Amino acid sequence: MSFLELRNLSVRLKGSGVPLLRGVSLSVEAGQAHGLVGESGAGKSMIGKAVLGILPRAVEVTGGEILLDGTDLLTLPPAERRRRIGATAALIPQDPLTALNPSRRVGPQITDRLVDILGWTRAAAQARARDLLAEVQISEPDRVMRAYPHELSGGMRQRVLIASAFAAEPKLIVADEPTTALDVTVQKQILRLIAQMQARHGTALLFVTHDLGVVSKVCTSLSVLFAGKVVEETPVGDFFAGPRHPYSAALLAATPRHTAPERALIPVPEAVLAAVRAEVEGSRG
Amino acid sequence: MADARLARRDVGLRLRLAGGWLAVLAAVALLAPWIAPHDPLAQDLMLGRLPPFWLDGAEPGYWLGTDSLGRDVLSRMIWGARIALFVALVAGVLTCVIGATLGLVAGYFRGWPDMIVSRLVDIWMAFPPVLFSILLVAVIGPGLLAIILAIVVIDWTRFARVIRAEAMTQGAMDYVASARVAGRGRASTLWAEILPNVLPTIVVLLTLEMGIAVIVEAILSFVNLSISTDDPTWGGMIAEGRTSIHQAWWVLVFPLTALFLTVLAFSQLGEGLKDRFDPVLR
Image (cartoon, one colour):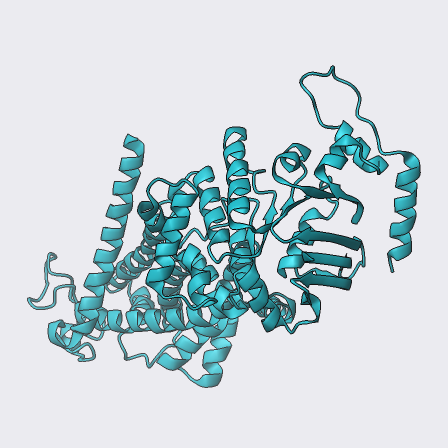
């Protein structure tokens, strides 16, 4: 039984009615890492945001279901939905520079959720935060908890955010391009850390990225998103052995390789694009 | 490195000078009944237009001279500080609270609250402010309350506009999304996550507004729309001093200097506090 299942989710821009997601279906098994790949603008982040209930105001859900642990979030009243998401899901955001409140110390930002939603005592929450910071390999948890975000490096902040995401033992974590804003050496450490934490805590992970290499390291299955639609959902091994959809093939072929000579990018076949265009025009209105 | 230290010391000095002047002024205002050497309203035509103490013809006890009606300039300035600071404080804080609240709500919630506040600001700004305040005072009748009301009614847009933009920027940050995912309600997010980040801006605007309030009070006094003409206000003194500038420059120059220093001190205090407050610059 999948922990998170999207059925036919459609999202569009209010006003103009431009479709952003067109009937997206995918499932994330409990305790498994699922990659969500696609080029920029395909709607990857939009899916993560829809799941966590933080879609921008200009965007509305027009249909479909978001089943979190068997309950359709979209049918719940807002307060109940908020509570349920808060208790079972968490976010590792893209940009560690803006993801921590600059005017608050780091410690309370980790413990907030434990105290506010789960009703922990402040002392217990602090002890928990300290343990987690140690777990994400921060050497002086106490100093970091007292620090303001600007006193920490980008990598440190992303570690803090990972610790914070795991704080309440969520069943699902949405990681929205968590390494994009970091430099390459730090990226590697952070990826390894997320994979370790995910495995150790048995958390389901929806990993949004445009980097297939990252998916191959962290995830067991993946969905390929193209123009607001999942064109392929498959185990990672099968995907790299032979992608089925022409867009997937083009995406995989676009990965630069040091060992192969440079070659031209393979475009997505014109027939596929024409079909997508026709669909988008048809669903608009 | 040395530059950074220098800049830091400048900030400290600026804060100390501005804060010092305002503290002295506040003390003077509070203690006015005890430290003013004369009754600010007492007229003595025999002692009209006495020069300040270092000039020939000065009378002992009248340190900064007297005006054309023989009222002591220093005493009137001391009592005037009382009115100026009272207006600055009350009008400044009221303007700030109203404008910042509307700005925060509009900027964070967007949607229809934003529509209402933004349109209101647009309409408001189409009125010429000085005319508007004169009209207002004319309707309510002159008095301290009318001045304060005029300042609040005119200047809340200043706060609303700036704070709205700031709240919008902060609202788009990932930390707000994280807080929302963690189950924080909208109002709580606004209060606990966004407000602390907008606070430095609010403080700067507040101090600027206090300076502006002092000026507006002086302007309204200057055009005789403040409290009764007898009452000692800096603006009233400037207006009066203007008529006898050639015979008694001191009646104009001393209150003008006090006004200038006070407004400058308020704006410098704001700048200094901003640097102090900002967690990134700190």
